[in-house]
Every structure is written in structure tokens, then in C-alpha cells.
Length: 84
Image (cartoon, rainbow, N blue to C red; front, side, top):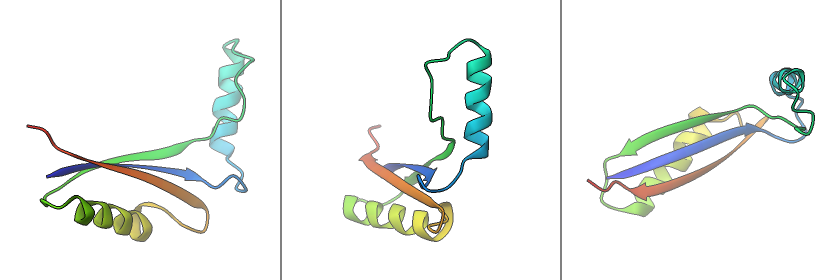
């Protein structure tokens, strides 16, 4: 069994109004050094297979077809064995 983590973020060319609102909130708390806040999604899943390449392929395919809108978003993923 493998555990995959997927990070989905807006592409740099896409405006992020939620990130801008959070950045303004951070500034209102007095943290003026913070800049370029971007908001994304984080997804975890377990994949029941014995072959890491299969788990990686499934994670990538799921991300491309369901988790990320590839027109506006990018994703990165990692897959590691589950240690019980």
C-alpha cells in the first residue's frame, strides 16, 4: 500500500483573490514582511497496490482528471509506502 500527497495551486499567471485577501489579513496582524500569498489544495489518499509505479501513475491520472483544472492549476505529488 502507498500513501500519496497531492498539492494543487493556481498557475502563476492566474490571479488569486483568496490569496490576496489572506495576505491583507496577515498584514493587518502586523506581518508586513509576508508577500505573494497563494492559496491551494492539499489532498492525501491511500492506494492499495504493491507496485510504486502503479500508485504514482494512478495519483497522476487522478490529479489530471479530477483534482486539478489544468487550464488554471498546476499540481505536484509524492507517493511513499505505508509503513505499518
